[in-house]
Image (cartoon, rainbow, N blue to C red; front, side):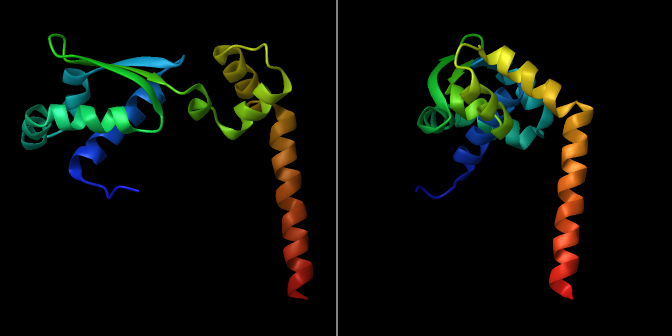
Length: 137
């Protein structure tokens, strides 16, 4: 595994930003908007090293395809489908292979927002606490 460097850290931040915002398998990160969260020194660094940062994005295991439009200052990233799914979403997808990405997310969100899910969590915590108490005796 390659050691981390500043370009890889910035690339990872851009990738994570895109993965968090996407509602599908691709996302366009507008560099100017993304840079709003950075100070002037960092903005200058990123602009100066954009080629190296782009290379790091291309190497990332989450990115299936990348196009950097230098005229519009945009990263158009396509992510590997499986890397965008949470553990619960993967379970949903494994139960029905004909669901699209958004349907999987909707079902997982419905499960997480349900009273039954909250009760299951509460019951598991209570069970765990009982076992921990028994082990302490």
